[in-house]
Length: 100
Image (tube, rainbow, N blue to C red):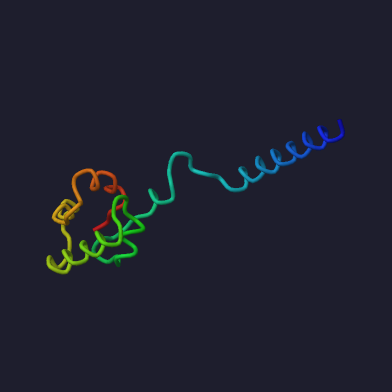
């Protein structure tokens, strides 16, 4: 019985701490950190592109930079579809994050 009481007390303490932490550190529900981050596709390096854009790994990020160098700079996010492997779905997933 003592073991059960200790377990219940411990659970109550953990629950209380979690509730007080939630009040001290508000969390935006339904929005991940990656969704809040923006990426300037005209200035970001390959690592920033790969980390900041869904569906873009390091290889595609390097291809984005290669295309950017060829174009001078991007004037429309749809120009990213010139990169092999980037289609309308990748653009749609990232349109809120991409900055020109």
